[in-house]
Length: 280
Image 1 (cartoon, helix red, strand yellow):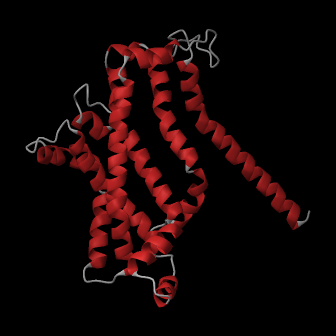
Image 2 (cartoon, rainbow, N blue to C red):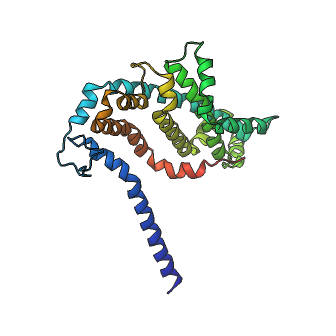
Image 3 (spheres, helix red, strand yellow):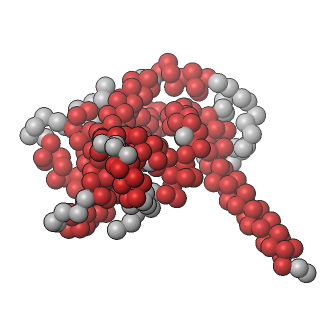
């Protein structure tokens, strides 16, 4: 058997393996979708079928008519967009400075930031609550935005710095010789080159804010301030806990916006993920 044939067989088995993994990871999503279309609340019963015998869209209708999911969507959207703008607006310029400028304390600051980012956020929740409560920022979007931005700005800094480190300095030096100013170098050369990594960083920040659960249910306790995560928790924790089809329908609806954004940015995902690795 030739080497080329062996490589072909090996590649075939690898492809089959990853296809199987993809199907396995899709099972919970397909299961939730099946439950959301089920007219019977038979999630935990022995006669549950993966393909519902009685299909219905009433569960999705109930999500929009019986629960304020549009309000939860609005709250999550505001938190996501503001956190994204602030995190990228501070993290990207800081990443470029840390990548290009050599100043005293640079490495120490980077190490402190990565240490703070690695610190479990759950352990800091009590301290953050005590800090924000006297300022009246509990149960407000501003308080949660501060918490999210403090976390994701550091992530944006490190992820973008890893990419800026891979851009040859000679490109910027050549632009300087051609008469480009520092602002023109950044806006017309560096940022266009970093577009895929910025897109991936933005996507990961959006996913974090959209799915964040612990801070959302502890810092936003008012019914009119629920995020999507908090709203889903309320469906499960109150009178709706017995209606698994409605809960599954709400989960599917909540996932749709972030999936749309993901597919819109999909072409940038591969390039951005491979080029944004952390580099000292």
